[in-house]
Amino acid sequence: GAALDYIETSLSKFNDGPFFLGQFSLVDIAYAPFIERYQPYLLDVKKYDITASRPKLAAWIEEMNKNEAFNQTRRDRQELVEIYKKRFTAQL
Image 1 (cartoon, rainbow, N blue to C red):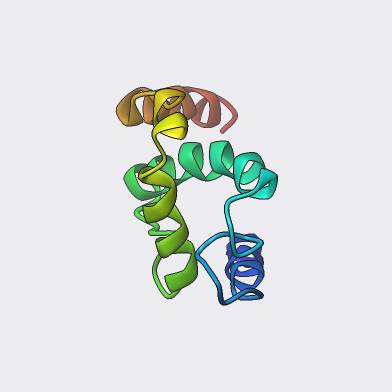
Image 2: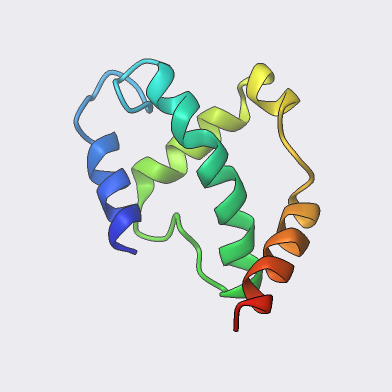
């Protein structure tokens, strides 16, 4: 939760857009794969919504979902959940 709160705070530094630096940048590209992979896993397995009480993060995810180039690189959400279930359940 603390890391996600830090992301929420970082997204709040600029008021001219929903991205980390206000406008779409390399910072958004760097964070996108991590958020894309952990969001469905945490929601499905841990029942933890990373956007709850984090409106800036929710807006960022919404805007990233509109980015066609990003969408072309995405994996199936359920496939990601299954991969992470195997990886993290095996460690228990």
